[in-house]
Image (cartoon, rainbow, N blue to C red):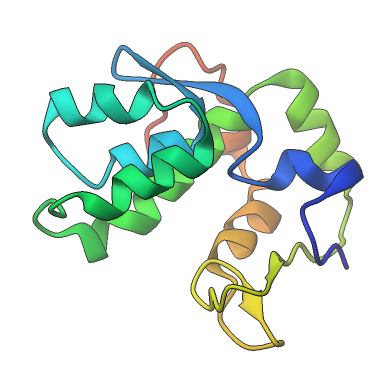
Length: 149
């Protein structure tokens, strides 16, 4: 099991800096992309894409009025960002090198939806990542947005 996205496994973190190109906007990290998806206001999406750090993008995302239907859309947004992120050949290779290891974002900030705090929570994002190692969508070339149903 990989239980923290630090050091050798920092590339698994949404805070890992790698460009995410979606709908003509380049986001410096998947965290930037995900936070921007909370709104349908293009100017706010661009503002978040220009945040200097993923932490700053997260802070800006917390200030947004959530788009209609966000709770039903957020998993799709995360999956889309991860598919684009892991279309990078180097990151895809690193992901595949984790083999069958369970990927769990252990945290101390009580995130029980995307990660696991004190061995509780659903670890949804890690389920996506683990599943994506065997997902044909991982073959996405990154040149156009992936088709995700």
